[in-house]
Length: 351
Ligand SMILES: [Zn+2]
Image 1 (tube, rainbow, N blue to C red):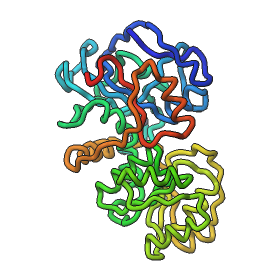
Image 2: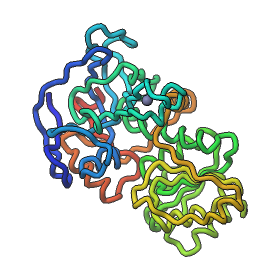
Image 3: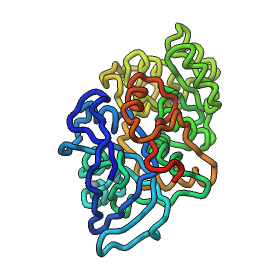
């Protein structure tokens, strides 16, 4: 089958088109003909560069975690949850279902987690084999490109908001408002009835993101009066929830400065480092909380896909490119130029 592989870690040029063997589904697995696969800044781009500490694979390796496609076969002795020919989105996280976290229903913190494209071959290819538990039929009106674009970030956004307390939240500030995860979190928070603000770097990018119409306001985080501007948006109360997957020190400080009493900072990433200052005195004085969310649980996946069906949630998509242009897609994301998701299509467009 056709695929894009890496034979070593390195810059985007290590992504090369290749012909490799089609995988054979084992017991409990489905064979999926891939239609679309997202390019994830961490699971794909950092992974390609060799910067994902929990990655485990041999070269040549097929990247690609979040994907959608068509079921074409099942492994032996496998109970088929959907007929062959069904169009599905594939959950990228494979839970062990044996550890104490899984047993307690907290699969997002599974101790034996596998991730498609990170600890097993991924979807920069015509076919994948995936556990049948990871299949979900696409809701009506949602195509594979859209589904691949929100397969990880949609449920993750729901998990972040659930961890922060959906009912206790009126206002959400999303740091890195143009990122794939940020734009998706904005769409999900709006669908849940929240007022959503975002921060972005620089005036031009701020204006472009505001033009998406998915934020109530977007503030240039580099402006000298950014804190005052955000405080004014909340009539001085401060925001209830800050979502920060960047962990860039100045941005973190800005987030803490605009966080209201009982406010929560939720993080699922540390793109710009991960070491920030926390004013513990402010934290306890205002009864604030810092919350880490690794990934979404099964409960978040179900709740998110219900929003897709009932609230018309769709992902902001930056661009759609053919699979063989994976290197170009990686460069675009590494340069921080995307607003929303970059998706690769495999085979015939729209198939
Ligand atoms: Zn587990």
